[in-house]
Length: 512
Image 1: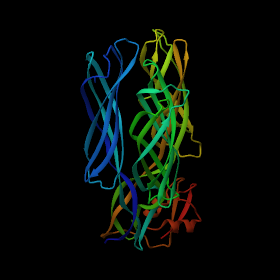
Image 2: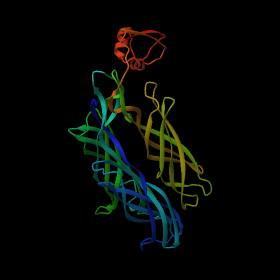
Image 3: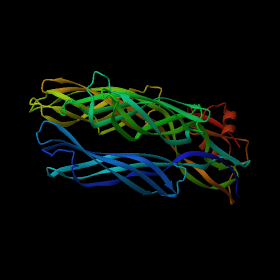
Image 4: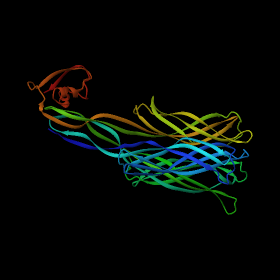
């Protein structure tokens, strides 16, 4: 005999892909005519950016560009030069199933880069970077929330979880013409740029998600007064953008991520030649995921007072996003630069970083590292480059009332680095932006199918209205009721009990 099962939809995210694909970098570059000869290479790095994301059936396509920059000293050994080469890349990733409409979160990671000068005007470059992606599709599975049948007893449990309400991703342009102040010498060539996008506010407005923030842009350039003179300039560019968030509601937790998808800067001057401007063309990519708090009732166990049952079970894991953390931390470190000493620092920046987060003793503890890239001049006024890895740890108060044993997914952004020269070294102060998605997981066995075996009726003692049972503390009323083919509610009423377990040793009257 089959029973009517009441089912309820469970909207959750299913990870369809989470991995990386390596992209090789193999270049044989001849310096353009306007670049002087190479005396010594100081720094080589590859900078990849993802510009497009597309899903076609079970295929994820990621396209982008990468630039390889080489900082070197010219033949005189006193002027810093930069050679740049740009190329495009394309990555095709096969998913485990068609994923039209899925959310794609993608980023790049530099693996290694090697560079050597085969002649004063030729460079041999080999390296690799990885294109990493996580594809999450929204799936609506069903769980059994009730069983219809007079002789059926069922154990139900209310489970909180985070419903995946929706997601969106959008690329948009940001254009600015930035003036160089009169206190700064005019710009000749741009050597390097650093751009960091930070979120300041986000909220749902009429079916849209409004995001506000600013881009911190730092430019290292050579002066028109002296080619050996390097200058830096920093700008803050505000932005505001509406994203299509039709499924987002006010009660959702919205996780927003920002990336610089493209950046082009040109040096321009006014008609008189007295003022310098930076013409900035930038593309930002904003992605958002909305988690809505929800509850679902599931049937975890059942028995019949009349027949033996054939029950099918399934293991179900529900996740609840309990909080999205946003922290700022200042990391101070002293870096010794032994040898030639240091007379001037041209620029300090970050390129690589990693972080993990976990709950420990009532705190969410971030642990990670980031590198500090230093471009400076020694006592003889010759440019040199060095870098250091800095370890850090930061604790976010979690509190005794918060859930324990949570899982964290974390991100680290180095928003800026300031410095102070101290003898033969420098002291750096890095502003760290730490983010974490804090999740609780509930895994339980629930009923998926149920059927009564009418050829196996249960034996019931009907000779008396009540039976006497001597219970031990902690015994489950559910197990007792199942053994006597009665109900938990009947045992509670007869013995004036509350709760699911026997509190103290004693006699129970079991209605038959």
